[in-house]
Image 1 (cartoon, rainbow, N blue to C red):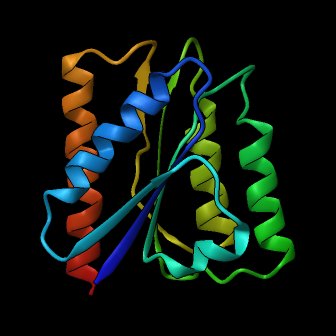
Image 2 (tube, rainbow, N blue to C red):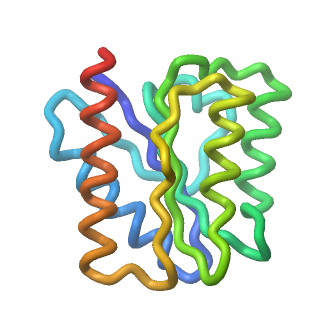
Amino acid sequence: MAKILILYYSRTGNTEKMAKVVEEGAKTVQGVEVKLDYHVLPETLSTFDAIAVGIPTYHHDMTIDMKNLFEEAAAKNVNLKGKIGAAFGSYGWSGEAPRLILEIMKNKFEMQVVEPPLLIKYTPDQTALEKCREFGRHIAERLMHKA
């Protein structure tokens, strides 16, 4: 069974709301196992076929925890080549963090990334949550077509 990790960080709860709905969308696709988590060890990243990172933007950057996770994965030579990568997150004024994560996934880890990232300004409303659900479904469908 294809496995998707939805990994997120959320300080205000906005990105967490998004992550839970991305999970809902991914679970609508048959043959996909979805894990939602806010912390994983770098070594476990390679056990998933797709990784979707939910990350808010703070001060024009990603959070230090997520930055450290990917730096540690690189230092430990975690192989993510060819796996599907996606990013989403909430933001207040700039929204760089999901783009930065995609850049790392694409250029450092040679993942097949879903572009563009899903960006939601402030608190996700019903329209934004529907976009999250569709985003999760899209990731899962892309994974199943790849398999």
